[in-house]
Amino acid sequence: MNSSASTKERILSAAELLFARHGFEGASLRQLTAEAGVNLAAVNYHFGSKVRLVEEVFRRRLDTLNARRLAALAKVAGQPDTTLEDVLDAFIRPALELSGDNGGALFMRVLARAFAEHDDTLRQFLSDNYGHVMRQFTGEFARLLPQLSKEELYWRIDLVSGALTHAMSGFGLIRRRSDVSEAAHREQTIAHLIRFAAAGLSHP
Amino acid sequence: MNSSASTKERILSAAELLFARHGFEGASLRQLTAEAGVNLAAVNYHFGSKVRLVEEVFRRRLDTLNARRLAALAKVAGQPDTTLEDVLDAFIRPALELSGDNGGALFMRVLARAFAEHDDTLRQFLSDNYGHVMRQFTGEFARLLPQLSKEELYWRIDLVSGALTHAMSGFGLIRRRSDVSEAAHREQTIAHLIRFAAAGLSHP
DNA sequence: CAATCAAACAAACGATCGTTTGATCATATG
DNA sequence: CATATGATCAAACGATCGTTTGTTTGATTG
Image (cartoon, rainbow over the protein chains, first blue to last red):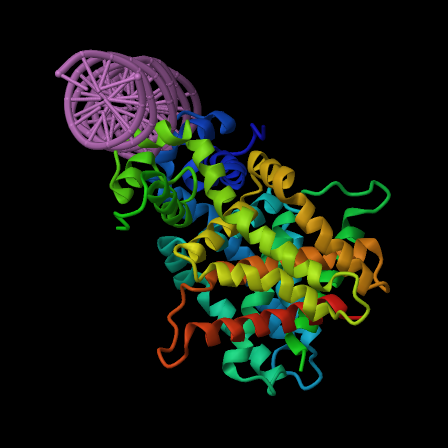
């Protein structure tokens, strides 16, 4: 599969697939390199070690995902007429658009796994590299929901994150009715998620 | 630890701890039996294999958890004055009460992992043995939310499940202020989850 | 053409995996 | 007391793990 892509890209795509299916410890380098059609030693040659391959799988997707999220947030943050739905759209839409890319839907499953695993090493890596994104969104939520205490706001953001992560990890994997275009299906999903999240966040 | 308990119980508790920390494939029988203070061969002697140990970890907790959930649901299901909050309480409270039992909080993390892993074998096992519980709750939600289409209802239940699973997997692990009793903290958490879930479900 | 170097390769390293074996211990039964 | 039984034990099984090694390939460069 994808025999035209470079060895590094082939490894990253195979890693995304097998990490989604079997987890980071459950997917072996032998399965992984066989799936990618490359030599076993190629992983250590190109990435140094398995844990650095894991980090690279995250970096490849999260760099663009979070850049798009921040770009979308920048267009609405601080504006007087910005709604809660606008901010949620800036957070959700880039993630579901990622599913259009090759393997992007699989990556959301990998992300959901990491979210549920509570692995300290991985959490530290994600916090160090992408914590500022969540902080910016939290700040904007705080501006739009001044009636909520800090504790209450964190509670709700945590619950919304759980719901969205779970929903996004299932997006693109369920069988879609063939008479609905992918773009239309995505818009429907985005609308569902935004309505649900906005209801949960703004509840008095 | 717990050297008074039987070997089987010691193994189950250690499995719960290490499955929560490192996942099913990530936790080895050697770590596990060392943690439990029993011989390596004891797992295969008492459980037959590792996968049957995994199933037994689920069975031990889910049998009582789902029995309590169904008992709580039976008290309110079908009644004319039952509210959405009552049904959510019947679903959430038994799970958080489980955290009072030894290791119960850890089990919720194991459950969250299984939820995120999308592992077909495990999903089949859970569906076969405990699918009827979710079906009964879904039926009662449908009765209380007649304005929602079937598709819309499934969407929201899925989102609520994601939020609750995530929240419950974190419960009991965060540092609690020492001046708040565990019972009070649990009631606060239940109130948060019910309000959030009810808002998301009943949103027009 | 000869030298160079990144890339790919087969093969092996020691470590660890789940599982099985056969001996040993403790307790209960005839 | 002799024996049967369930539980625990150290030790080993073959398989697989992540990683390293030394060599070969193939295109680039002087």
